[in-house]
Structure formats: C-alpha cells, structure tokens
Image 1: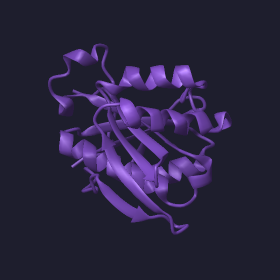
Image 2 (image 1 turned 90 degrees about the horizontal axis):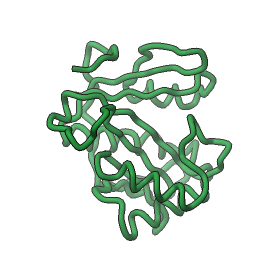
Image 3 (image 1 turned 120 degrees about the vertical axis):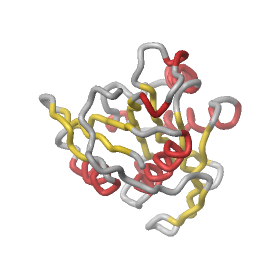
Image 4 (image 1 turned 90 degrees about the vertical axis):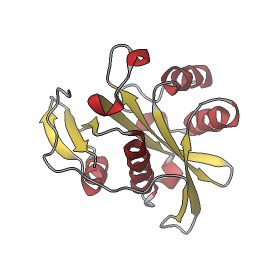
Length: 187
C-alpha cells in the first residue's frame, strides 16, 4: 500500500492516447503512448531533450548530453509509462511515470504501488496548453494500465507547474524545504 497521503476523492476520467488536439497556437499536436523506447521513438525523444533548455531542468532531470539522455531513457523505459507529444515529426513533450519501488522487475500489481511523475515540454511549446493535455493523456494511459496512485515533487516557486498540476487534480500532500509534494488518486 502507498506510504504517502493522497486525496480522498479520485480524479478522472482522463483521455488516453492516441489522440490529436490543437494547441493554443493553432498547432496540431499528437499524443502517443510509447511502450518501448527504441528506434525512432528513442531517437526522437533524445533529440527533444538535446534541444531542451538546461535551465529548466528539475532535480537533475533531464540529464544533459546526448549519451546521458539516451542512457536515462533506456534505463527507465522497461518499467515506466510514457506518453509523448509530437508536432509533425518532432517530439515536443514527454511525460513519464516511474514506479516508486526498489526492484521494478518485481512489480506484480501496478495499482498497489506509487508512481512518480515527471513532465517536460520544449520551451517553444510551453504556455500553449500542451503540458495540460500531455499530462491528462498520461493519466488516462495510466488508468488503462491500472495505476491508481501518482505523486510528484515540484519546486515551490514554480507556480505555473503547480497551477497545472492542480488544474488536473493533484493536491498538495507535503512540503520539504524548497519542494512541494503533490499527489493524485486516479479513478
């Protein structure tokens, strides 16, 4: 059972990928689940992170440098839940849930564990609604997979991110010195 505090009421439903939506800038964005990070899916996501402004990194992720980015994605890929946002051929956003367990290979009941969220959107695509849609599609995909408990930490001064998480249904669950922990219970 989860160790963190979660809201009493579940949130949802959320849309699940694949889906296409127009962002606030009129760009057509496609949301896709990525079951395996290999080939084109891996290369395109690595390319997004190579372009990602390192000043927007949080808690050491995403890593910098193509080799470290590729290694990070390959390391989390096997047991994580991933959704990417694409504009044309380019990945412009990535949201991931990583199981909060010591030995991911031993996961038997995805609903009985907690999943940590990370989400990144290229700077040129921020403030256009892509982050909200990407997060909702990730949560919809998580529900399809049987995931019920999702948490995250965000720097307390990152008010745009906190507002995004709250709009989707995350609630504050604890604070550390400079981080806000938030959680959501999925329906």
